[in-house]
Image 1 (cartoon, rainbow, N blue to C red):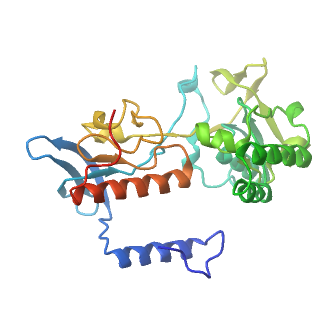
Image 2 (image 1 turned 180 degrees about the vertical axis):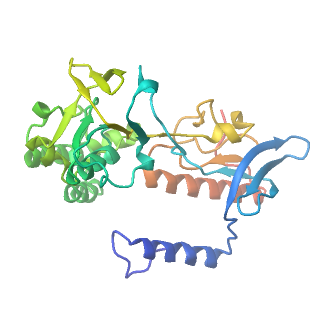
Image 3 (image 1 turned 90 degrees about the horizontal axis):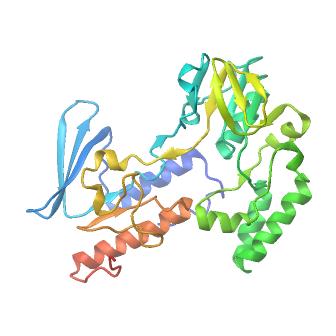
Amino acid sequence: MPHASSSSTFMSRKSFLEYIDSYISRFGIEPRYCRSVEEGSYIENERKWRVEARNTSTQEKEVYMAQFLVVATGENSKGFIPELPGLDGFEGKTIHSSEYKSGKDCENKEVLVVGCGNSGMEISYDLSNFGAHTSIVIRSPLHVLNKEMVYVGMLLSKYVPMTVADAVMTFLGKLWYGDLTRYGIRQPAKGPFYLKVESGKTPVIDVGTVKKIQSGDIMVLPEIVRINGNNVVFQNGVVKRFDGIIFATGYKSTANYWLKDYEYILNKEGMPKRPCPHHWKGENNIYCAGFSKQGLAGIARDSVAIANDINDVLNGIKGKTKLN
């Protein structure tokens, strides 16, 4: 169902919710809100999937039986915090970026952000704006672009090869931001579009963080070696005291915890066993959406493939995607 012609390119929260409500109404979908899935398993003799859920309002248990099961919890179900030597003994406050609300309570405090994706960079910017003495750990090379560059790149990618679009994006990034190596930010050897397709790694869309790094308002630090009390030791030998650490270190899948028969489609890390683009289909009519590490575009492709395959099965046509 297309969006209304009056919709802006970047929809407001209100407009997006209105679209979702219209979608539900048009296709007769019946969402079950306030439900926590406790367990999913395949019933061999019935050839059906059994899902146990708990109504979080009434605490009553509900059981659903279905011929098909689509695991759409995605790869970002739970915040991931790495195991660092001495982290358990850190005397300040630690949170995952998913818990971050605002930097208003961090004025004049020493705060370390671990992770240099979009969340980490934006949180660093917000902390600095609220007067926190902000540092950020940047270990890996990354592309830094702005929204205008991304728009140009997306437009170009429709008409020219990915390598050309990547070359233009890389050139624009260097032209606008200059050489960021001296500030601790290295550029990857491959272009932003290539990295997105190959590994799902998204370029940083700068909101003003780079300027603060260049001015010295935000300090870039390398990999953490260990933590001693409130002191953090870095790979370059720097030792710095912090009041708090925010981990913008990504997420992980939790589907393998509640899905008891996950091996029909997932590995023990909760990710698809089969490589992209055939990752979305498993055995015994189980599917997964949102595990391709390719953002919304990947989710859209998964959704279409899954819907078509289920339709083929219901119509007595053998699924087009064969399992190896």
